[in-house]
Each structure stands twice: as C-alpha cells, then as structure tokens.
Image (tube, rainbow, N blue to C red; front, side, top):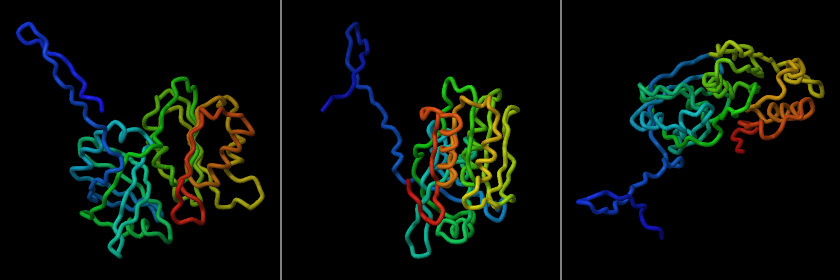
Length: 266
C-alpha cells in the first residue's frame, strides 16, 4: 500500500516532511436527504417540485451537480413502506437558497407519478448522484442540434441556459400534447421547433422526420444532443446517419424511457 503524499516545510533551516491530506471525491452512490419546499402543477401532465435541506444545500455547490443536463436518482416512499427509485434531470439549481428543482411528467399509472401528485411541502425523500449524462460543448462545435420529447425539456432548458449566446442552435421538441409547450429561456441564435406527434400514422414519415428534413443544410456539421423515448431517439439517430453521416463523436444520445415499459433501464 502506498503511503501518504509528502510536502516539506522549512524548520530552523532544515526541511521536515508533512503529509498532504487529499479529500476523497463525493460518493455519487451515497443516499442524501431532501425535503419538498414547493409543489407547482405546471399543466395536467407536468409537476415541478423544489427540494431543499442541508444535504441539498451542500450538493448544489458541487461542480458536477451544476453541469447542464446532469441527473440524479430520486427515491420516493411508497404506501407499503418501501421506496421507488427513478432518474430525473436536475433543473434550476439555486446556490444561494440551497435548492434544486425536478420536473415530473405525470403518467396515468406508476408509483413515481402517484407520489409527485400527492407530494406536499415538508415531505421527505432521498437521492443519489449526480450521475453521468451531463452536457459538454465540444471545443470546436460550430453549431448545436438538440432533439427531445417532454421528458427531455428540463435537460434542454439547462443546456440552452449554459451555451454561448452567439452559438447557432436548432431544437426539435417532439410532444404528443400541444399543452405541454413551455417558454424556454434561449439566446438570440436559438430556433425552437415544437413538433406534434399526436397524428403520426404507423408506416408513414412521422412529424420528427418531416421537421428534420426541413432543417437548414448549413447546420451540418454540428454537435448533437438528444434524449427521450426510445422511438424518438432511434429515429433521430437514423435520420442523422442517412442525411448527414454525422460522426459518432459529435452525438450524445440517451434513452430515458420506452413506450409500454413502466420502469425502463438503460
């Protein structure tokens, strides 16, 4: 086993070895405590909950937590006395207040949806992270293409809030319900395309493909970040390959969920 690293200090003309104590990086697997501070129903299918507490106040100070599009595993209590864990993107870290927000897309069934709908100020949960998945803007990226669905809105907003204001960005947001639109804070060179997939017919080019075909040719080459439902992500990757032959090194994709599967893991 290696001994401690040593530095030296001059004492009366001689040098005395002193150990350097290196602090261990935070354990992203360790469960931390959080308390519900605010509960807002944004619309029928979206709830925003603000979490705070001593652990949260320390957590939001970490560089990794502040990386746009990073996510945590949130563990919510169940009526049976256990807990259910789900992954959620961090949103709006307030370093002064010591809080962060999480947006919940509400489904008809599911333990996490039921908890989010019933949550009240003062309710306690635990969480761990941040996990991988944060956004890094490539040093030579001349343009950026963002693709996602309702579950990726928090990540896309975080990315738009961090990229340089002069970076050209095209964002394709695929929503099944027009009421899920929300105002995104974006720079002057960002164009957001809200795409409705409600009327997509099996076997026919979908709304995402039609919107993709209308993107300006000057967008290629670009860096690409995409996330959301399995079908959306896989379709977008196919379109990138067919139209632009985008290099894999420029693409980051993450499947958040899969239609018909209540607890999808990647």
